Image (cartoon, rainbow, N blue to C red; front, side, top):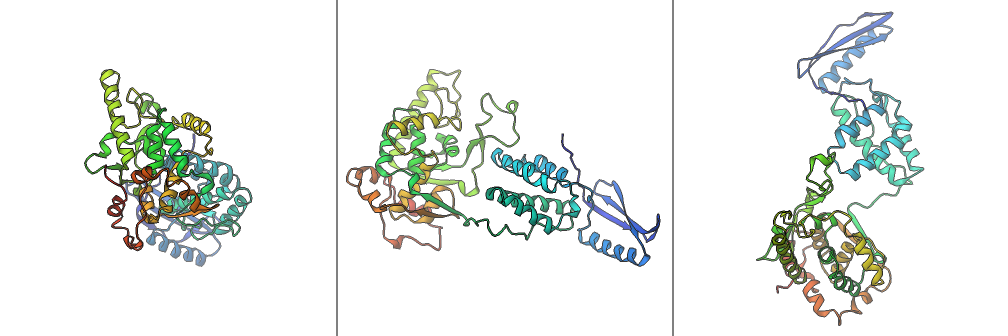
Length: 430
């Protein structure tokens, strides 16, 4: 069990006059909290009355501005574990929590865990960053996030007088990540002919719809699993993406329906992830066919069937798990002699094909659910050849799935308000 803390805000205070305490001078501070409880803190050890009065004046200023340290005798180790388990764990994904936990327990605590929070300064934090950077650059970036965020919380709770991590930069040797940039490596994506082969072959597997949503609409795996038929606008042929499936932070098996611990409905990864997308004809027809199968299974199993309306589901209506696709997907790649790329890289394939067909990069970012993200493609080889070699064979396929090239006048790179309208022009109605 870890230590827990009840940080209370003081609403009133009283600073007593300087008096003799033990062999020197000092004064006491009486704090009153919102629940009417009180706490007395003593400041002593001054050799002269003048020194004690100077400190008293400083404390009065801190109390007035709200920067007075109320909980100074807390060790960094105890505070960080409390912050990690009680404050962050209920609010972040399991993956983020595990990354934070690794950094806190294996890197931060061994170096500064025995110190008191009130003694932290920029020198100690800079030394921490340098030490972690010697081992792993990725971990030092997480460490910096943890320190800045946790010390902000400590400052707000009167554990610290200032956030010493606020203005500390990472060591110079740590490469700075470009802000909001999605880099796509063409060595790790498929060409158009390969996409077509994969789609055709997937028809014989249970992951056909997942392949379509990833390769032809650029959806994330967790977003695909969370799609419902109610998200489809059958008149305008659009798809609303507004949820994903995963494990809620700190949730337990007993809190969920059977076998649903990792299939709980969550908000999208970011607010920009909520979006409405035009559905390519190819995908729209597949949705209609899949719906027929869904209704057939529901009639066959009226008692056992879970009518939750998920598009990608089992014959009993259960949504697919996060890794359900893995075996089928890897087998497909192997049987078709395709590059062994991650499923997520189908999303990058989708983005690259759009970009190479002169689609506005801001529009692509919108489709991907990254409204503020810049997309860059790391080019390897003859990129025009990737597209041109297959145009004749895939002309009909491209017309129904991939947007045609348009004149640049359609794009307004300084304003993304019209993106939804522009995108619709690139997808043909049936």
